[in-house]
Length: 337
Image 1 (cartoon, rainbow, N blue to C red):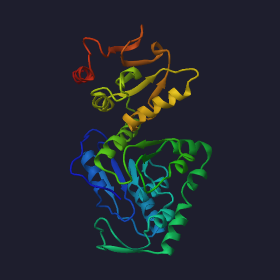
Image 2 (cartoon, rainbow, N blue to C red):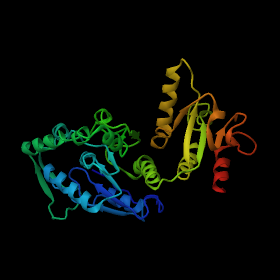
Image 3 (cartoon, rainbow, N blue to C red):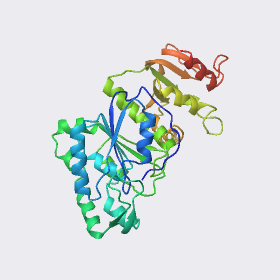
Image 4 (tube, helix red, strand yellow):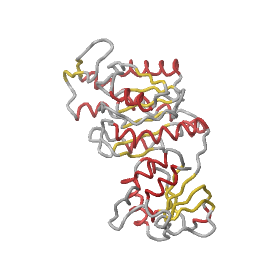
């Protein structure tokens, strides 16, 4: 269930020399547009994918076998593939719009009867049948989701939970499993996009998470940039000119955190700020918001602020000053470092 576009930004250093395994969605194949998208985005990684059998027990068994044989550094699954990916324990993995309730989804969206494979299959088949028996098979496999995690010892569970990300499109009208996923795993974020992945949602919603995973695997530490919340919105509550351009450039090279004042009794203000950040900065800002009234205690490398505090433990960049009148000057500054 993927939508293909022609061009994707490339990141030759991310996942370099590593292996990425991709698990496609229902009615798709290893020749999906997302496989091509991942290969384009990470040209120096090896990307592997397989046609997943229609019958879910066969599909899960095949994917477990391939994962053990290939030992991928990262497994990415979308929709039905995200459901399978959750059960491939012991690997770093990303579940995108995971269909943990496949049987219900098939019924609700009228998938019973003859269906057409959306992408070419290795066996040459072009059509398949969805029957009530097949729906029952998917229900049985759905019931296996999370059971492997819950069977682990507490220490193993804690480790496993840090190896999995759940990413959910805020415009997904097909599956809605955020709450179900969050009952089992802590690392979950929304991205701007629908159920079908496209270039923009992949670039802005998935690539940042892959960057975090790659950094952790490599034990890579990036310099820290703090951005005070006063630098985000204009007088109309919209992103300041070139803010999103600057933010996108900074997250490629730095750990970027948003610093927000911490009111003692105004939780509505906190919720409003968090909603604004999610709306305009989205996934890259997930879990990267710091609430503090003591900026001088934050240790980092750069601090972008309209009114920098005294004795900052970072190089101060004063947005709105003669040197940094707009975000464009900030972009130029960092491009020269």
